[in-house]
Image 1 (tube, rainbow, N blue to C red):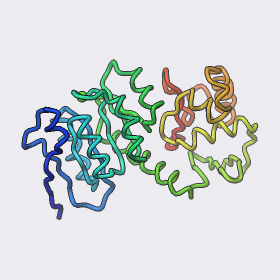
Image 2 (image 1 turned 90 degrees about the vertical axis):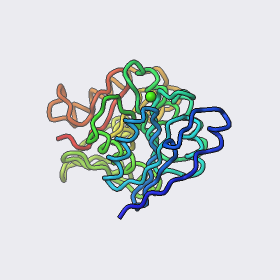
Image 3 (image 1 turned 30 degrees about the vertical axis):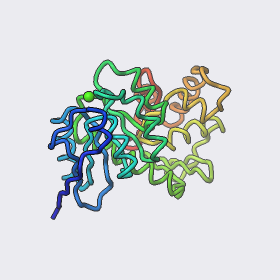
Length: 261
Ligand code: CA
């Protein structure tokens, strides 16, 4: 049985004169699942998300303003944050570094149309993934699972392999296997693939790929990524012209799709 408790609204919001009705009070459900802070000013959408997440066993914390979101991050220490970029009081983009300063929890940014540039900036500021409205609940579930899984692995430092299709990438041995055969990759090809694999299932900006694969001095050398992605696809993809694993994220970067093949 799930029990719902109500907490008083934060003094911070009241003090700043932000409308705060009784039904704005924050709720949490007493389950064992990860706690998700849902920051969304569209109350109907916020409620729908909370209902869907609670039925999946997540604990939820609702927030309809940026200021209350910062407060909830400090007080409740959520395991994952869903952050709408279009908020009434604080730009969601400006919230990302503030949340980062207070929490290591992964952030999935949710943006409406016309906020493409902000989405990229949010990822560069430390968000882990993004969803564009309208999105489906199954899509949200898949992204949340991938984000939480990656985060746990990074936090524990125990994950030494990533599997996609018939491939196993071994970070420690620094090699890629297809079944029982070694796939011959150049050191740079391996580093590029390993960078994508560290963020498996999530988009990685071209800038981040350059920084993590080649180093900070290689910013804006977007051609490098394109050339090496081409050679990696030739070695890994069954049909390099229709990639299943090394997916392009238009105007943004790339994603290693671990459920391809
Ligand atoms: Ca909004």
